[in-house]
Length: 187
Image 1 (tube, rainbow, N blue to C red):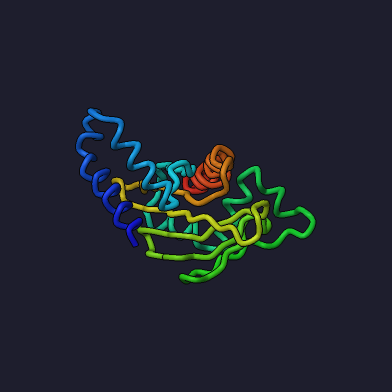
Image 2 (image 1 turned 135 degrees about the vertical axis):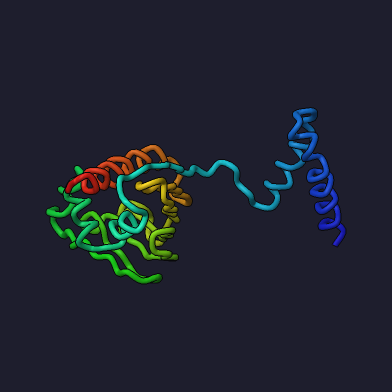
């Protein structure tokens, strides 16, 4: 039982040194913090995506585009991922509109479940691509806010497999944001 006390002391010393770390005066406490994190299994090298996009529509309209089968299918048909809809074994776009409900997008290449749904404000999904290992889900969060007559969308994506960040960031832009912006501009 002596070891946990030593670990707590190291962690306490590391936490006490945080003001010094913030001021850049010492690197030794930073090493102690990193060692404590390593011992606890904390990783600091996970990729994450954060994007911000404005749309010429209200937050409720943008939310509806992301949670309506027919409207999201129209987004898909404007993206270059439209070919996934006619691929062998492709599944139709399907979005259940309640928390816990499943969704199937882009011919079945993207699947998941809604974790949290707050109309016009927030949508959180457990989200995966068909190329990821079985059972691996990431978390995507769409935060919506009014910006005058427009919608400001803040997007975060975490928990995806290492090395996928650049491809996913590109995919969000060309398969979600660009076609969604085109649809919202149409009269």
